[in-house]
Length: 521
Image 1 (cartoon, rainbow, N blue to C red):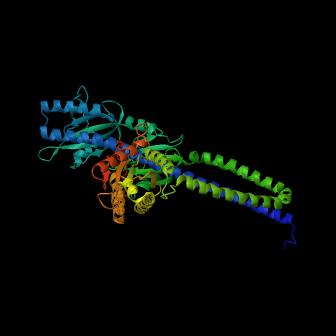
Image 2 (cartoon, one colour):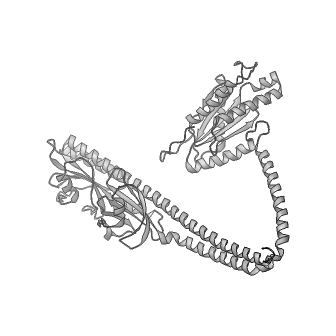
Image 3 (cartoon, one colour):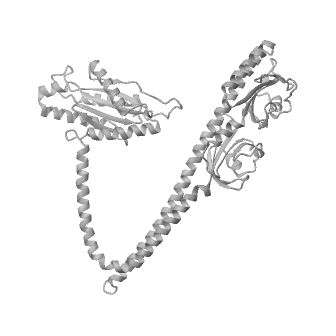
């Protein structure tokens, strides 16, 4: 076969296969990049929907809590002049404390205004015609009701009514207490979200009525969208989900993530324009594909000339590969030796410092706990004096073997020789109890070795350990604080008699939102 076809033929075949492979790989990479971009879009819309649902739920919950309190006051204290005066004072204070509230109002069974948070009471107004008032008059339930958006008669602004029924002592309808949630509160929050030029976010009730949407248009408030694809996707299960849907309002195809509120019959949706989100991918794909095609053309043009160099190049490349592999092997060996303690086989202090810095930054970024255990061999100097340094090295190796056996093998976990007979265990994403459990296993395992130690009051080799955890905050904590805390706890363990594990308290925790529970080792 080689005699029938010259090397030029095989070179051309090779160049053709390479060009086709380049085009195929580029196509696969482009398609993969598109799928990854869509997945990023889905994550972004899902996170936006979750934040919107939490914000809406919290805002309405605060208003509902105020309403529930006022209903209880009215039913207990009655509607006397003094009681209404106290109620007015309470309403004013609650509206001042809750920026989302437009006002608080109480109406009798005829819809007349009894008391509200306004400076003056307009007794001529009547709200018996409002949808939420009619709902409570015909429904004896005590649950909160989130009504349809309306224009407030007292402020002229769009509001969402959150109301509860007042019951008379005999259980009859006694009126309504209403909190008006200002739509501008949601409008400002939605305006702060980055959804691109053609993205959209919206708040609906479970009946398919649009309460608010960005892009903002007052004409769409209260619009019935039960016939939309979004409502059809959400209603069967009423669970969080994602789908690419055509908007009935502007005809844009968007990737929608929808999510129900936890406590109220509402749901939110966050949507990003597919065309807008894929625009950068299209530009990148076009430029990269153009480059690949040009490269393939150049390979075809110069393939004939390159064939003459194939033999020499292959030999040269073989020699270079061998030299490179040998050099990489030497570098790996040197790097491993530079990061490993020669006596114990554990990571050395240099590797520990690098890993501590990396894990400290990761814990700060994701607000996870970072645990650290400082271990010290009890009476190790006396052991060396009693048995000699050679036996001391054997002792240290045995202790380290137990540490390796008893500590987790998760990514990020590290056992290292900190210095002398001091050993370190770094445990990312681990709470104080979990780190203490690891340290206690190590302590028990070392004691179970029953290595004789005549100079120790315990008669055998034991260890003491200090455990500390830290949830780092930027510009507040340093990695050395965690080491210092564990060192102080170790000092406490030694002061209390050795052969024990002592804890340091958790140094810090962010209070904005409870973090996810850390893994307990």
